[in-house]
Image (cartoon, rainbow, N blue to C red; front, side, top):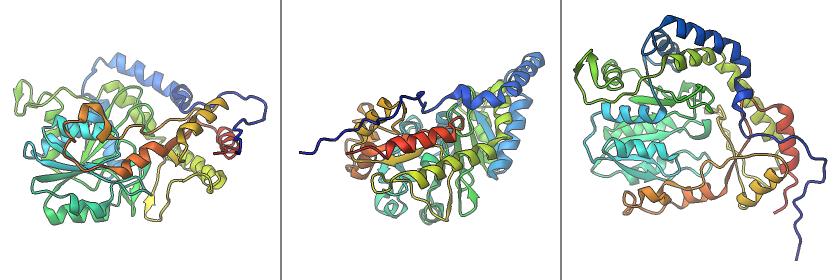
Length: 379
């Protein structure tokens, strides 16, 4: 019997974090402080000029006519689905391996999620399975550009057009990602974004936005985020309270000016992984000419993922799992998914995927160390 020794016989080094937000945001600190002081002195704290300016700048970056700032990425998805006025109880096709927020939004909007398996190579929803997942009650498709890679939007938009379905893009992980030159968030009726602090474009708290080319939908979303009010004290829709904070908008404006260098840094770190990781041991992300990937997450797969994670931690390298439990196995969703097919591809991904450090604050020296250590893993 072979004895596997996964000890790296090198001197101990400083721990490598998966994410260090203080380090990530350090270079913006003086700008943040100036923006905060201006925010306090201005005395206008909700839906002011900072939000309006960020909305204009982010819409320009994505390539849409409108951006509507909201309080979180989850709220962005809920508001998008509500504004589309889909029949309550109707089916929304959604990937079976997404983060739970994508599915939670469907449920909160009074709709029914129908799980569609992903492509095992891209981890995104498999467009070739959409047709067989269609039901007479299907009203929309909610795609998720997972890990910073765009879905195959030509096939997906053609499917939606063929069946007269609405399309929402969950772009929480894909700020600036492109498919055949077109930016995610500009394909569907709505593109929903999260600016959670760990995102490539991250705030210093919760924040989100919706992008759309549709004037009517944009106006409705603006009302929905503000108690359903288009005019003060006049409520056209039931709505919710989900307004992008002025101070977070000011921070996001600062980071948006640096988004290209953030993306370039993460793509540079990804290139190091692609060139350095042992491809005979680990399944790496797929790369295609059609996609411009922004690597919010750099995920690998390994059959002994849990052992690999422990081994890296013992050698001072912190990793994450995105995500350990597939939606169909989540306790709170047992009844919702009781009659749905099993999702073996999603379960395979969830049981083998591991996210390596690739933060904007991660250094090239740290990535080199990760590569050195991980390639010595024996399993």
